[in-house]
Structures are given as structure tokens and as C-alpha cells.
Amino acid sequence: MKFFLDSADVKEIKELAETGLIDGITTNPTLIAKEGKDFKKVIAEICSFIPGPVSAEVTSTDVKEMIQEGHTLARLANNVAIKVPLTFDGLKACKALSDEGIVVNVTLCFSAAQALLAAKAGATFISPFMGRLDDIGHNGLELIHEICHIYGNYPNLTTEVLAASIRHPLHIIDVAKAGADVATIPPKIFKQLYQHPLTDKGLESFLKDWKATGQKII
Image 1 (cartoon, helix red, strand yellow):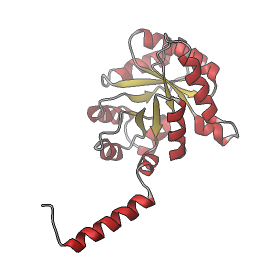
Image 2 (image 1 turned 180 degrees about the vertical axis):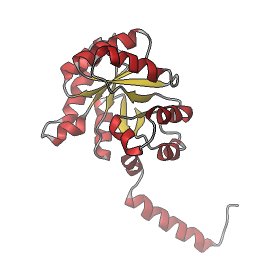
Image 3 (image 1 turned 30 degrees about the vertical axis):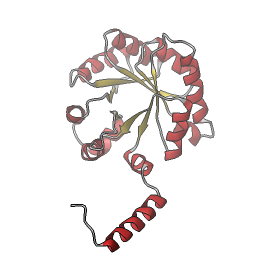
């Protein structure tokens, strides 16, 4: 499964990208707003050191303007993915942009029916927001299962399932079991993936015993 970081914090993205474990980036207007920087400059900078897809979201709700914004964003770098909302106009924009060979991430997906439409519109990625469904008492993981199952029935559908709105590390394990192609993860949760108290305790014990030997490797 691919790991994308859900962030627009250039410094933090660079730090975590050094692990070699980051396959792409997703951003949205809210994340960009938190940074207080020029949107296009932030996207271009991230694309300069992240080789995988970097999602940049359109802000218009009109299909013609979405397509124009998509073209503008796509010119920033070869690895920009255009995010469009899962609306009627968003689906039309997805079809137009994807027909031109532009990578499109259809976002704000909350049903399997929506996901099927996005796939037929040529989306490269579909982003079901599992955490937001959980927040209102629905089963977000079940949606991931449904979409993966439906897409698996039709080999001609090449849209990748990008599990979004990840709330905790168990979400990542669950979507991996469900067969999601990608999980987009807030940096805080990415760091939690490798943290474990027994790892820390074991390392402390090993280092204590090694120190007692008085030896050095170098």
C-alpha cells in the first residue's frame, strides 16, 4: 500500500520524506490556509522534492472554472494531481481533465455509488473520507470495503482507492486489510505508526547491556 502525507507543511514533509517511505502528498484548501503561504508556490515547492503525486485542489464549483484551474495547477509540475470534489460539475471536470491525461483525485467521497461514478469518469484516485463517516455514526471502513469490492469486479476500472480522513493508526491497518491502494496520513499519525512502548523499552535494555560490555563498534 502507498503512503501519502496529508499536509502542506513543507518542513515537516521534507523531514518525513527522508525516510523514503512517502509515496505522495495530498493537500486541501484548509491545510494550505493553515500555512499562510501562497498556494501555488507551496505546491510547486513540494513537487520539487516529492517525486510522487501531489494533490492540489481546485476551489471553483463551476465545471468550466474547475477545468481552467486544473490546467493552471497542472502546469506547476509534472507530478501535480488535480483534486476535484465529488459533485456533478466535479465529475464532468474529472472526465475532461482525465481525458487529457491529467491525474485527477476525486475527493469528498461518502458512498460507493459516488465512487463508481468517479471511476467511470476516469479518476486516477478516489478519496473516501472514512473518518468523517465514523464521526457521524456511520461505518467508514465498510465504505472502503465496498469500493474495493466493486472496483475488483471490473478490471477495466483502474481508479485507485485512496483512504482519506484517517483518524488513528488502526485505520491504516484496517484499510490495508480491506485492500485500499493508498492511505493519506496526517504527519502525527504517520509518526505513531513506528512508535511502540515495548520497542522503546527493549532498546533501552539492549543499550544498557551493551554499555556494560565497554565495547564499541566504531
